[in-house]
Length: 291
Image (tube, rainbow, N blue to C red; front, top):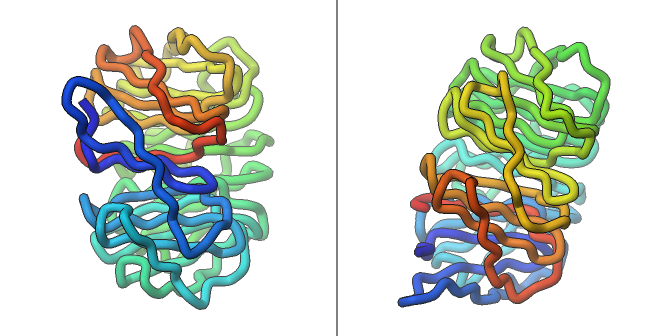
């Protein structure tokens, strides 16, 4: 059964509530703004932050019932958000923009990233150590909580769509044309991994150094149980592009994507069940804090 601590994100936000005997999705309207939103994160059951087009950053302090628009944000398209602590957040986006908040999203400052390439994803496995990836093989790393960033070299020319680290050293990048790369050295060395398909991947999620999933074009889902040495295809039952994935345990996971697609598994992905989303829009981001 779903919990209230889940939010989905697209141009507007949908929220999931516990319902006896069935799973249900309820639409929420994050007024007073109407820009497309790209990424959402929950700090706890009540405090939520979302980012999107035109430098939009909105926050909620009542679990998504009402929203506040942050002021004085550069007018750039923000694509990804990471929570470092209950008060610290980092957002990234087009033009290599990096924004940092130290008051739970109320105020933001611009941080130099050293690149003008779009940054598609940012993730902090630890409060001080974070990674961001984007266009034209861009990989950035910080070791001081996002105040300073430096470039990592992968040796691959591609567009990188997502990054996920399970600790400060071990992580994966996914990108266009079936790209998966892994590191065990904090990004100083990268190794290519292969699924046998050329569809682009847009999201990755690992619950340990061995077990993880990647999702992407044409409903593609792949799982590994050995850190990516071997990837096994799972059947999604859809052909829509899958944009985001999160597992809260070895068995329980959720995927969202184009055409309002929401998929849910309770057996590690052996079977995926479509959920009713009440929308045909693209679902770009999701975040659980308790499954």
